[in-house]
Image 1: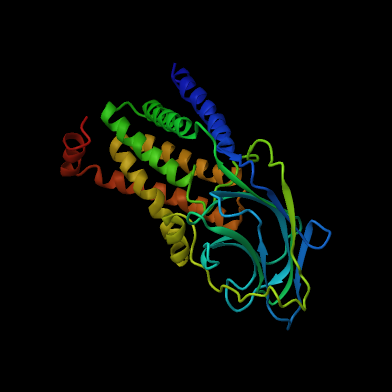
Image 2: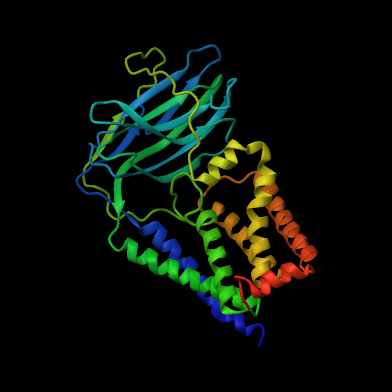
Amino acid sequence: MGVRKWYPSVALFCVLVVSTRIYWNSRFEAVQGIPMVSVEAGDKARICVERLPGERRIVRSIDLPLGSDVETLHIQFSYRAVHILEGTEKWENGRMILDWHDQDGRLVAHDVIINMRGHDENPRHVEMIVPAKQPDSVPKLRIEHLGVSGSMEINDLKVMSVRISHGYAAFAFVLVILWGFFFYMFVGCLSEVSWHRRLIASVVLMAMGWFLVVPGPWVHPRPLAGAFLLGPNPEEQRSVVLSIEKNKTANDLEPLGSMPVQGSWLIQVKVLLSFLRPVLHIILFAGPAFFLAVCCGTRCAWWASVAMVLMVEAAQAAFWLSVDWLDVMDLAVDFMGIGAALWIYRKIISNKQFNRWVNDGVLMN
């Protein structure tokens, strides 16, 4: 009987994972009437920007003949860093940036698409959605090689105007409600507490899922475990040529220098306080774990927090985001934060005043 009570929750979870993936990858569609633009180097789809030691920095701008009616861009390509040695500053590497210009040609905003450093044995595929920074802005691509040496390889670069599909808002609303119901069921399977506590705990888990899993704190939306399903491509397709000649000066630009941190407030805090990365991860999961323990007990708090940690890592892999040893360290630190929160909870649970607040206060029995 104990196992059977999990059947509805497991079945609903599987349905929601599949539905969320379908919704996420299908919520944009190609805009007909605006051409799809591919970028080439001469007569090749492969772009190779190489800088030798002692040569001047390479900065190129690429005009995208899309017009000013662009609301959102879909960008896809593959890339490989070949022995790119960074300069004295962290941002002095190979990077591709999306510049946004106003109608008068003034540069108003930027989106960093990729940074390249080191050496990649195999190409990495990138597909992302980039919303326009302001109405009637004109996008241009910028390629900068600011590293000391090495080469940037970019293949099959395509840019297309997209928009949100019809019915997106209604589908999203239904998914949010169903995920909230799932977390309510999930907490009920782990702990027999009043509906008030179950509701509060499910709201906490829902907020963690929203900010950490999907959509998460990522900079730009990427497809979830697959590719975006954008429908038929625009009938008109155009190609633009990026000149990579070393003696070219007509389209040279000054490098942008250090770029502001992009992403949600979580990403910005994580980057700005990178020297406190383990501490931030401990706080990120210790706080909710402690609150869940107050609501539903240590057993529920442990398993719910562990499930959330695993969902975060699974989402990062599903979004095709790179995983390195720092992510493994983050995973260990997350578990340390959860364990520390539950240890502190057990230490203070014997306090009569604390118990009275928990049982007779806002949480109720």
